[in-house]
Length: 331
Image (cartoon, rainbow, N blue to C red):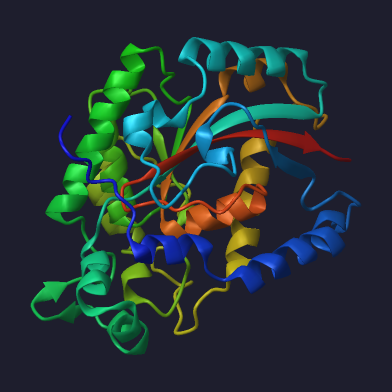
């Protein structure tokens, strides 16, 4: 096997383990307020609670060293065969009460973008001081909405080969694909899954999956029209982008608390989409929507893990972490 390009850097580690105070703040906000809030009709705003199911993947085990772990060389970190994983998740959903559902989320980060190379080459300190607000530096264009570098493309190709190998070993092709509107994530999905997933499985572009919003020019998205021109030809669905221009981007950086709320909203919508008109889990839908793929960003994945109460885990550019989630709906 050739040397993997999916090796975490020190900056990746800091991305995954930073902002501990905000992580604690979100958890307290969830416990004391968000989990109890109801709308004008008396319905819970966040009815679903989430927990990680242990025993499926090494990444969820606190004993796994996330600084050195490489899922490519570990069959994605699985602790069982794909036949066992699929069978157990089907059984869990078949036997679950109508307020419980299980999913396996494949949380993928985009391959290296030109903004990543700027941070690596000139330091995170200079990035935070000045370079974050620029789009061009030293002949490199990295914002808004930067493209993948050659390394980023190769990282996506490495994931393509991994998925091809794992599918031969029984891995399920995800039932649904969701992706950030930023082109580095869309292109990573396109390259990773080219020729592997059927065309009928439409990737849905979701505004809620974008990187931490604001301040860093690289995280400002292109217009909806441009995104549709770029990726509509590959079957991507842009209905999840409600505004033509990026009206959300400001000079102020979104907090981890707010990003975690945003990701929780995405998860609420995801699990609610398998419910019937009475709000109960539709067994047929739960059995046909177990495996979910998302392509997003370091900050977005950190928010996912925070909301799911999963351990912090370092994800390289182009990296991915699978998480088995139990969702329970409250009324």
